[in-house]
Amino acid sequence: MNTTRQIPSSQNESWGFWHTLENQASKAWPLAMTAIADATNQPLESVRLFLDSRFGRHFADDVLNQLYTGHTLPDAISAATQKWMTWKIGRQTSKGYGIPRGLPYLTGFVIHCEIVEESCAA
Image (cartoon, rainbow, N blue to C red; front, side, top):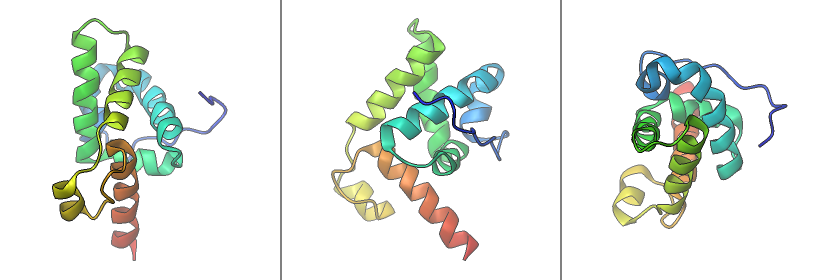
C-alpha cells in the first residue's frame, strides 16, 4: 500500500461510500481509496468517482457486511476489495454498461465511472 499519494476528498458525502460508512467514513475513505487503486491499477481520481457513485455505495455495503462479521475496518475493506476483484463482468452487465466481459467487477466499474464523468464533462 502506497501511503505517499495525495488522496482526493469525496465530492459526494451525502451519497455513495462516504454516506454509507457514516461515522467511520473519514477513517475508511483513505483505506478504501488506496486499496481499490492498488487492486485495479487505476488512478485515485477514478477511484474517487467510483466511491462517490451508487457503485461506491454498494461497495460500502460489502464493507459494512464484513464489519458486522467481526472484521476490523482495514480487513473489511480488504475483504470487500478482494470480493469485487473476484467477481467478473458477465454478459448482461457488459451489455448494460459497455464494460468488457470477463474484466474484474471492481476494475470495470472504476473505469466505467471515469468514462461516465468524462462523457458528462464533454
